[in-house]
Amino acid sequence: MEIDDNTTRVRCELGACKNRAEHAIRFDRVGIRSRLYVCDKCLRELYEAIACKIVPKSIETAKKRGAKKERK
Image 1 (tube, helix red, strand yellow):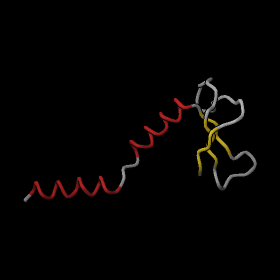
Image 2 (cartoon, rainbow, N blue to C red):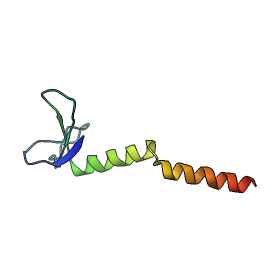
Image 3 (spheres, rainbow, N blue to C red):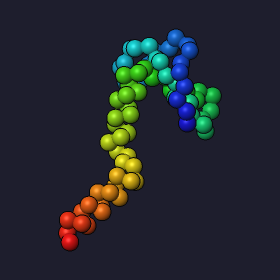
Image 4 (cartoon, helix red, strand yellow):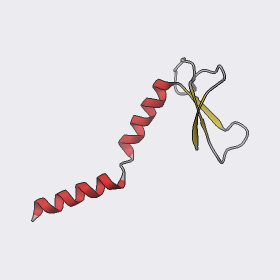
């Protein structure tokens, strides 16, 4: 999956957003229509939503180590 700059005049495809799409998300294993066009605002909101669900392993490990030190 890659995020490219959009060169065509297309509207954002997320929700009811009517802004002009500035980015295209290209999927690897999809058929004919393999791009999702998004504006900058929706891309940032999507990034924040993903960040809430997915936490890097190093942060999770640091939290566990901190909890173990407090117990001792």
